[in-house]
Image 1 (cartoon, rainbow, N blue to C red):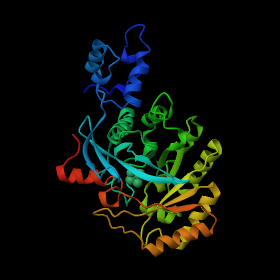
Image 2 (image 1 turned 180 degrees about the vertical axis):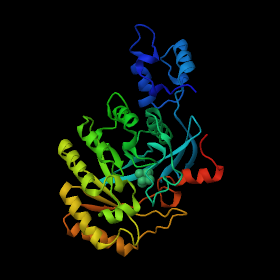
Image 3 (image 1 turned 120 degrees about the vertical axis):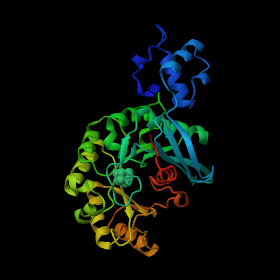
Length: 352
Ligand code: SF4
């Protein structure tokens, strides 16, 4: 199979002598105008288009299924070149100030096919890990979603399928093209990378010059409970993990975010809320509480509204900024991995 153009160093594009400026033209077509065929690059000569097309694939992801409508959360199941499936979710949020209203689009993207980290409550890990997404496949989700939506998303969160920090060699070049004004031009504070807690990679990111936001998928405030629901905690227990976060916060001078999925009877106890508040205060972290989205076949449940409110209240009373995130995709399988799982079940096998 031919490689994807954006996965190949520009020197290997072998642009005609004296035509280095073509690089910018091609990148603009792909990253700013979201085209998916060489034929659409009308300022390139026909022979150059034919030459590139004979050597490199351009389109990294094709929509296999779209759920939802323009005004609501839309979930995309993408088919990749090797027949694997990943998903992204496009979430509109209406913002209003001084009488002016606008809709901001947040795209949640995947970083791997499947996931090796096996968090007990998560659909993505059920089928195990298949492979890393390439740089072009990460960018392809943004490009295709932008094309379908008619505009670039305003925010990007790496909270889809996979552990982004396990795929840093492909993620970092993708981030550069996402953030750079000569690439997609998202702006660093509009890109959030989430991690289940890979401490060494958090430290590596602390040393990296790229700017972005970091979200730690904490989901439990003590080792005892985190060990039970997130196997990664056995490798990087909370003490080790929070020290890595200290290093990130100090190096970047940026607030980090704690993601906390509330699971009834597992991690929604007031004692967890108080411990969580301690961790959050130490790092000046903001906490996003996410009531669990039921996954078929898994034994976890969403807490009652009262329990959710009380957990949030405890954080607020302990001096922590906290909000409850209401997923809009509850009715369309918008928890990570769910749409892909259904596709796998339907077809019997997702990738070839
Ligand atoms: S929550 Fe994230 S890291 Fe954990 S299994 Fe799911 S995709 Fe992987």
